[in-house]
Length: 330
Image (cartoon, rainbow, N blue to C red; front, side, top):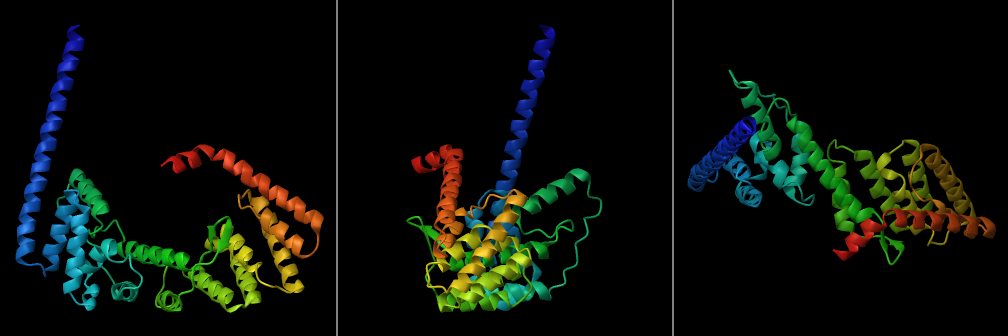
């Protein structure tokens, strides 16, 4: 009993200590925030002040406020200031989300131009302080620690956001159980093509190919669509495989195609199906094969592959039934 009492007493003291430490930390963070808020209000054009204020906001879990501070700062500073390292790191998190902005374009230009020296760890920094600094940097997105290659981080942000917009403009989507293409916006697509070719980006070849396929589809260059998809497969572009190819070819088959092209597509899809099965993949090529066999006049294979496709979809729906129901209820 004495032993249990001692343990309980120790736990109570430990909890109280942790609560006190947490309260002190919160109070310290709030004091730090108020201090930097005053400095920011006095000098909103100083990048060092802006950076420290944003870090204080992040530490206080005020992400929306920090985003607003950055956007206000960008409305006042010239685009050329993107070349400043500290400005660039701030923009990475909050401004490089819009591929159609001038800042986004300049970001692609600046990332290949900059040669950032990795920062040295502060002298005399112990292990605990170093870990705290690293975790803080990972959370805020505005640090420059030597363990993190910030230039690559910015490059990932630019590439990811550009690729996301290209997918939005180019990839077919399901509507009433059929694939349809997004509305063709020549100005946006011209802008995206320009950005993809402006600098070195991650996944650049796949983005270029999606833009080329989309253009060929809208201009009726059907043979070019198939050639581009074959090139992507031969080069093993993982972003341009599977469901993307199924969607593009499904849309393509709604056009009037000559028999030679249909035969080429059939051969191509059969090859993809074999590769998918060998690799244990999950892409359902069977509905597409059923449609292709129907177009070449092979009713038996058309019915066979349609049934196989239906079975795959039914099995998939059953497997994810609970997830679908939960999503529908929300």
